[in-house]
Image (cartoon, rainbow over all chains, first blue to last red; front, side):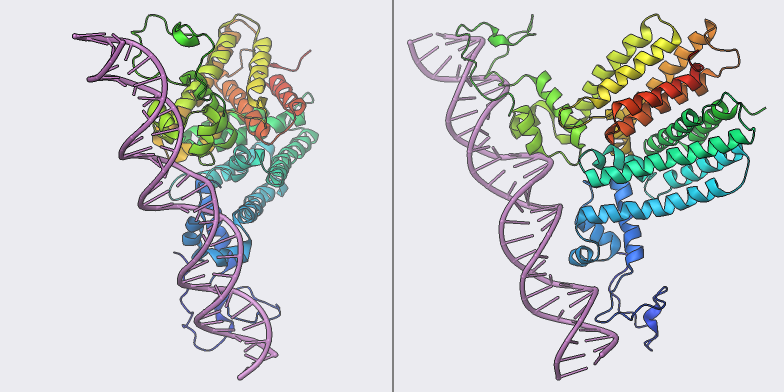
Length: 226
Length: 226
DNA sequence: GATTAATTTGCGACATGGTACAAAAATCGA
DNA sequence: TCGATTTTTGTACCATGTCGCAAATTAATC
């Protein structure tokens, strides 16, 4: 029970009821919702990442979000739709962190180091256990049977491939890689390294070991650190 | 319904009832079982690989194995025990195929090609969809919450790492790799490549693309094919 | 007060994991 | 030959979970 139906009686004057981001929107009528969809979706995402789709019941979700089932249903649709929305949210968050590092100007090795450090932060976070990569976990489970989910997962996988590829291409142009380097192949190795640490993180391999894997992989990709 | 309770009235003489491997065993008393545990376990494994632990019900398992629930329970224990036994069976099968290739004498590049071809065969098989790598799928789902399962998964992951590492060490000794090559780092890349094709296979990436990934990775590991 | 929208309660039909128990089918001993 | 014994099978059952929905309730705006 996280956000429960306490009437927000704190500020007795009716001044937008503490909702943070309601700017120019057309003033919601009717009974105000007792939850914030954004934070509820975040809680749902946490649960799904922890337990997976099938092992997460609506009651679990209801307890975690503080919304009871019908409210959940009304706000997000059924369990599958909630899973999809959670996944989109994940992509927005995790993707944003990655994109920032891909965009910024820096040497190749440093960029890779920061990408993997960021990935490890995401995969190893979680109170009750490492939450792993939601894309990888979803690929392993729901993607086989659900075409819509599969397409989203594929989009995530190839998105990372492409980001890495263009990153290696730029590095090659700047002379950071030998002329013989194959940016596409390197990108797939880089993605594979992301996937392997995602998998291993879920098996509770400690961060030190994952960092060693990353270090070795970077060494193979851009040459051992002199 | 796969092996159903047809009394095996075919061979009317009571000559071991067609059960293949009952050699010198002390003659089972009581009503004979209507199933063969080996094939039932195989069917259970298929289902678990397809749907995962949580999404597979005892009724599903019962239907697939042709055993009804009490028989299932008596033969293998509860659902979790059955999952564990299925995983051990998978490791026996898939592991054997791999070990054979690792043992045999052949050039490094060929060995890698055969390893990955064998992996792809395993991951892409399945009537209803690619079954993927059971180790990877289990790592992503059950390994987080179940220490016993986690240990088995870790054993599988590190087993592959070690096999690759010793394979690269031998190759280096034989002069197939430059003196600067780092067998451990290469082994982790090789494992990562296995993991990435395992993940992607579940997202229904076509075999051609997976083979291209493998080819690129081999190129990075042992040098592009001249 | 009327309207609108979100909330809560609670239902109904069904699936789930697990078990109890009697009938069935084989071997063993006399 | 025939019953006793042993093991598996099949049916039925239980308590609990499960999803989705239809009322009824509450609170805000008009």
